[in-house]
Length: 619
Image (tube, rainbow, N blue to C red; front, side):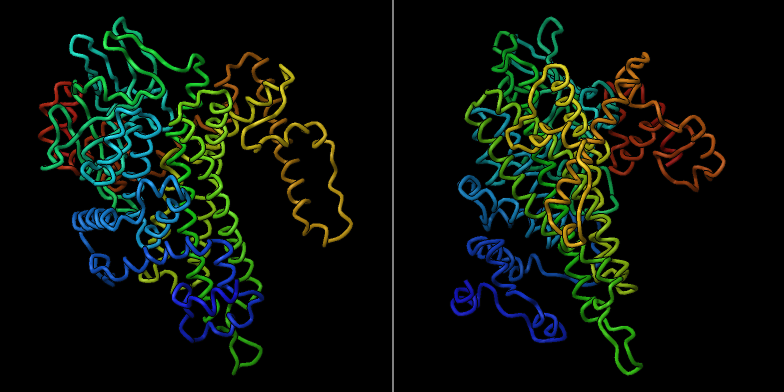
């Protein structure tokens, strides 16, 4: 391996420039080139080098130090860069199937350059594209070609102004009209506006819109995805009945245009329904290949999991960058020493090592895990595409959903804490904008929120585990899952009886000891939670009440009223004293998007017209 790298192809892994870091590189116990080949493989290293070289040599991607782009200019430039990535054709549809790990590799390369670029590309090609591919059928394959030729530009419209994590409460409807063989997509009021949708603000021409599917007779069959054209691809003007706009500047990732959309009785062909999980006949009868609702739900989780799995990769790339910056800084920044004449690198101090090295270890562990989870997701989507409706396939969907719901919080929170630690570890120089740690912190921050708030997602994972335990207690079922992530729970009672026994400090370094401790902790927390919930239920509490018995909350608003300044000073639509959360936020967004006047013609806006009038004077 060493001869291949050092003697055969120095262009693949060229030597670094000589300088102050040479001393540490010489002290390393291994060849960094050999480790790079081991962890990535020669083909992947060449793939990444091709991408990085293209970006470096293309004037469109030239860095402009000190240049503060306007919001409009940044988003325009980011779209042009995204378009150029497709022109380079780094990754064809065929490559995605042949070498699926090239997908997260490309996303990480783009994200290392600019998080907004990675997000824009990801949302169009993977989140929108995979939703069409995995939730659609043969009649939708033409969209896949258009996606990669950028003849259309897509977004994934699930969340609404008043509901995000609680997808069951989403209110956009799709009523089927058998007379015309069309679905009527409709937003009943402004709270049902699709909101926070990446790419929707300025550039998306099509959206995968999740709506409640209803057939004649007022029979509704839950959320289903539809392909809906929202803009004319040639003019980018809204389609009839669609009100669409940008939600404004964010704390980070401002190259990505997050937007909103409302639909007023927009008619789309019956074929616009992505019908892998369920379909409607021309006469208006709902049909589904899944007889079991649980299986249908498990299979549908694939489209929701893809975004979360991708965020794991996006978070890790931010941590990679932060750790690289902080450790190289620490190896060359000299402060204090054994004598007044000699200063040593701050990396030599144990305190600096304790601060940074755990995050370096986390990068390697999480990066390996994210690749494994992505391949599991590919397996799920291939099963969906091939029409696999087995119980294993449905269980695989549920397991990946649970894993993604736990790993997104783990990766994004670890990165959030890691970037902050790296920033502080670089002292004042870390606070300088040009050194990028602040940008990384702001761009990573939404990873903790979108595609599901981290705390809510962890509850979904715990619900999955509690469901398995209840099934085992009541039916004596074994703990089994396709990816074997929960199989260790089969030894649940025995694990809880184990005691922590080691004879030396060296024993604690054995990975089996740490793994056994984690297994015991999971079993303990699972047992305690299960028992507490059952105790609350036996006392008469509903399942929802049982989970909320312990909240310290009745005095919170009154205590805030004591410390909060007037609305003019607080200056936050979601924090105003009147508590009109959605009206205030919606009005501010319309003002920001310059569509306030246009909103008055919206037929369903009668409830909000007085609010619009008052907002003009306030805003």
